[in-house]
Image 1 (cartoon, one colour):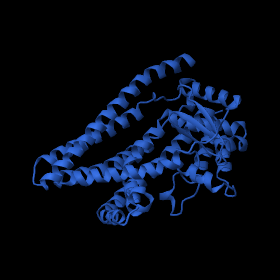
Image 2 (image 1 turned 90 degrees about the vertical axis):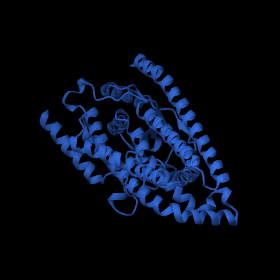
Image 3 (image 1 turned 30 degrees about the vertical axis):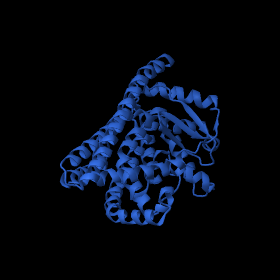
Image 4 (image 1 turned 45 degrees about the vertical axis):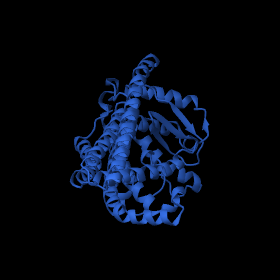
Length: 378
């Protein structure tokens, strides 16, 4: 496994570097085109035919950079199904569930993209509105990442967990991912960048069988590139909602401290906020539905890897106990990656459509059904 993992990383690293260089080159070229188009528009008062062409070219290059980024994320690691050694317990996606996830992903990405393309194509200065929207979205994402960039203290991974992870990775036929133990009072686990993150409080809460089930759940996410898929699918909604957030709360941006700047942001908000909120929340609801579907698939993968669906069910019951007391600061930091966690870190008011995870009773019912099938087959 070690030699195979080194080979995979040695091949993936040059490819990642090429993707990064291509993405930066396209971003710089697109940004330069947009600046040139804005300068031409400024000095011709919109009476020229060049600025729309150059502006649309710039937006196309930026979109191409996004496509390169998406491709790099989705091809960063080899996708695997469970090895034949697992026999009848191999991970099999339900066809209806897989089709639903595919349609949801395409709609979450395609609907906002088609709306933006229509505005740019049908309005002479539509490229300028799209470019300004991208600037506001970038500012909003920068503010959002201030919270996510907070580093946590990491602890040494227990030997038993490392052995579990290596054994499960061999069953799943994937390279052993890095395991990080985070000092955090929120008991949860998630995947990011091909790594498995587990909080120390989760390790302390669960027994060995439940810990193995949680690791298997996260490995199922890695085997099917769920973190990459969710990042790509959620990109349009995050950009749109970040734009609306900046224009609705201009005081959060240091550059908007003055009265004129705030007034300008409010005026721009009249044009940007309604469509951004409408399209952004439409895409966001689709992403949440996709997240819930992928959790069902990861649960099935964990059950197949361990052969003990009941262990995952027991872990989920402990993780969703309503009387857990979690410091508000830790909760805020963990909510930033809520769709990637094994269980919801906080219930959002508004019904099932706004939840990042399926209802606990549905997950438990499916796991109990799998447990019954396995017991009957023995």
